[in-house]
Length: 128
Image (tube, rainbow, N blue to C red; front, side, top):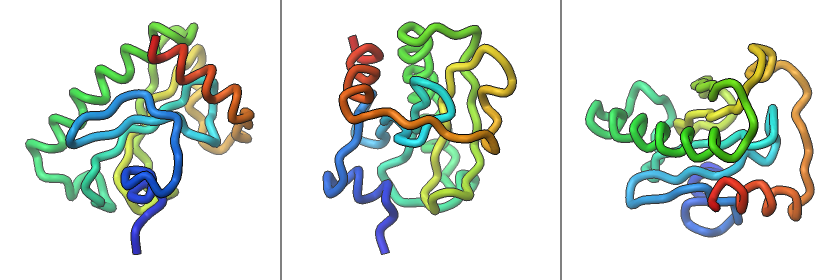
């Protein structure tokens, strides 16, 4: 059964796209820790990040770096936090999180909620 991320890749579920190439997709997390929280995924459905073939994993990190630099430029923050947890969706993904304190990457804290209009505004800001 296809994951929610595969359905996003295939266009069955909309997303707020930040970046895309032939191998990877980055889009806003709709249940973010902070404003600008972005997910980077491979287009091939692989459950566990360390099951990704080495070359593809290296390319994914370089793609994530480009996304992180875009997010950092658009969202006021001290740093970009990067987290790989892998329990929420059985499709490997990297969290790109603008942060000012370590608590900004605390996944046990309540998630934020933005309207579709606010998510469009955030994605437009990152993509400008």
